[in-house]
Image 1 (cartoon, rainbow, N blue to C red):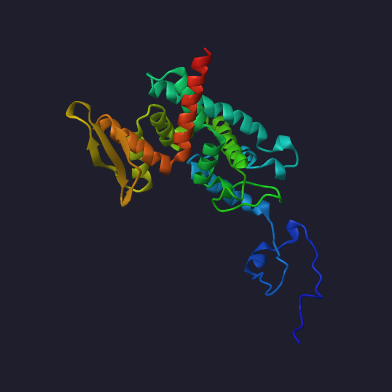
Image 2: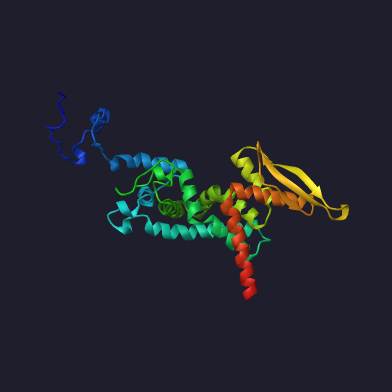
Length: 294
C-alpha cells in the first residue's frame, strides 16, 4: 500500500514577505498522480524583469517605470479601473491615429481623402494592433486577472481586444514619457510595412503587393506563367498564373499580358490573403452603392 505523504500535511498561506523565494525556487513542485496543481504567483517579483523585457522589446527606455507598469496592467488585475491601462488606451488610440494620418499625408500626396481613410482603417484596426502586440511579445509582459490566461504568442488565450488595448496604452506611455517623436518612431517601426501593404491593395497594384508578401513570407519573388492566348492578333486575350516556389495559383485572363499578370496576382492574393482582397472588394461595392445613391 502506498501512503500519500502529502495528504496529512497542512499548508498555510503566508504573506509574500514571509516566503524565502531563493529556497522556494529550488524546490521541485511536482506531485505525481495528483489532481492538484500548486501554483505560486509572485507578481511583484516578476515586475522588474517584465518591465525590462518590455522596454527591450520596443526599444524605448522609460524614465517613469510606474507609468510603464500602468500601461501593462489590465483592469482585471487593477485595484480600480483608474489604475489600469484603460485611460492610456484611450489616449494611445488618438496618438496612433495621428501618427498614421501624418505618415499617409506625407508619404502619399496623390491619395484622396477616401483612400487614406480606408488605408488608415485597415492599419489601426483591432486585428492589426493585436498582431503587432503579439509580434512585440507584449502578451508576456501584461498583468492580467485570474480569469485570463497568459499564453505564448497565441490570440486564442488572450482576447485580441486586450492585446490591441495594451499596444495603444503603451503608445500613450511612450508619448507621455518620451514625447511625440519617440511615439512616432515606434509606431512607424511597427506599421510601415502594413501601411505599404494596405496602400498597394487600395491602388490595385496587386503585383507589387504579392511581391512584398512573397518576399516576406517565403523569401522569394513571384513568377508569372503564360498558360494560353486566344483571339486574333488585334484582340488577343492572355491567360497567366502566378507561381511562388512550387505552388501555382489560379490563373486569370486579361486583354494584355500586363493586365493578366495583375489579375493573376490578385488571384494569388485571394488564396494567401483572402481578408485583404475581400475587404478591398467590399470597399469598392460600398463606393459604388454610395455613387448610385448620390
